[in-house]
Image 1 (cartoon, rainbow, N blue to C red):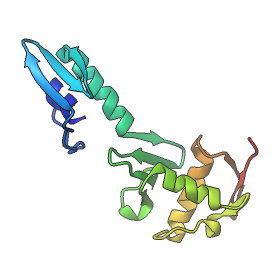
Image 2 (tube, helix red, strand yellow; image 1 turned 180 degrees about the vertical axis):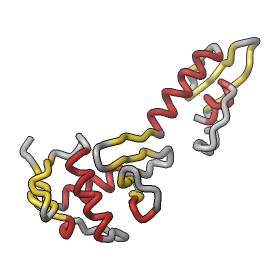
Image 3 (cartoon, rainbow, N blue to C red; image 1 turned 90 degrees about the vertical axis):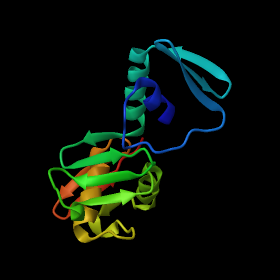
Length: 156
């Protein structure tokens, strides 16, 4: 990502990863010659900007659902937040999406907010995660009841 930012002339505060020894970038007139793992790529500035945008989208993007929003960060962390909420009390940061998936796998076939056990989860955050599990397509479950908020895992 760092090389692509340098290559297309964009500055990003999201990527601070240093380049690897097997990477190099050089300007050759209007083109930039990029070497990654022994393979040489020659791109125009427009191609580099497109590649940068695609990489940025792959590494960092936000998805919005009815009640929740999630953020995939370049460092691999995954954030679940209550939609339209501004305070940190309405979000939970996981080390990765896989960490959230492991939490989901530990839940029983039918679960409520009380069943969602993870360090740092208050009652409101637990309810938010139940909603997120029912909204996110990666989790095979559906809202079963609103009072008490209950989700049911569905069969694949």
